[in-house]
Length: 389
Figure (cartoon, rainbow, N blue to C red):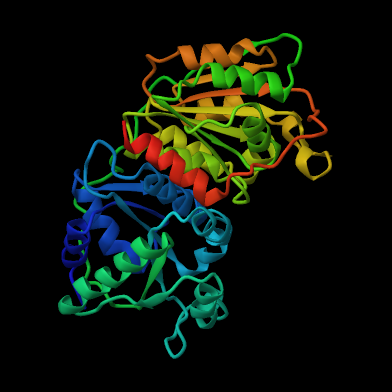
């Protein structure tokens, strides 16, 4: 058994200062220790997949301003691997965004546990191996910590992909929680009132042109949701400050949060869609709580899964702006007036994340191309672009 401080401080020496996850009793000492230290960062995610996407955003931000390499850790119970499969297989793997995973081993064969862990326990190693994530047991002796972290960082640096430590019961000694609440959470005593603007609906094409006009390359990063959103942004103007998600549906917002928190020198824009937002609505609460003023969330809502054939979503019955307001966003705009985009970017004096939902028409150019730049190359290009600022 080790002390939480022994692992966390050894990890800090190797650049790990960002943590995100969903609590498990095995992880309690870690979370409690990190929460006591204001020089470390812990984000309480709505689900494990959001935690992985958020740490991917931290990795995307690189070091910045000539500092040492920034690393992050996503923590989860092994039952949460199911929630994390999408970002682990189509975000971190695809873009080569490394992170350390700490996965607790509930239901480990031969160790009595609750019935809900009876299946996940035996298959946890196979799940990691199927996702091509190398793993080893979490260290239980002080002398094992440094070598384990060195093996993890060496693999992460060589491959750009995650590495997992699987934690058995009793690996870490208890650590008392001495501080209530969560560090870094904004307290919004007066939720933003929703401002609504009505006009004739615009196309996605027109909306994206308006976004480009408001996002100068030297100070802004634009992360575009999967599907036609990213493809059309690429077709209009493929810029070095843009990244186009493929797969990992719904992960653009927690990824943008990780980047915005770790790179306060950048304005980070999450271009979202109604289908993607519906898939991970828990992220609204996380962005509302932690979202900094350099985070802009624009949801383009056409009421359809257009890139898969135009099947309708239920977004017409959802008031996204009121949800954003209730979750603590500092600004919440709504409407079909394309001028909403200008208002969203002009509101730079608010204390927290900004949100706008713009209702747009369906319709996509018939010859819409797919990006010719690979996910790895677009990630590397973006990191080079923002690393040189």
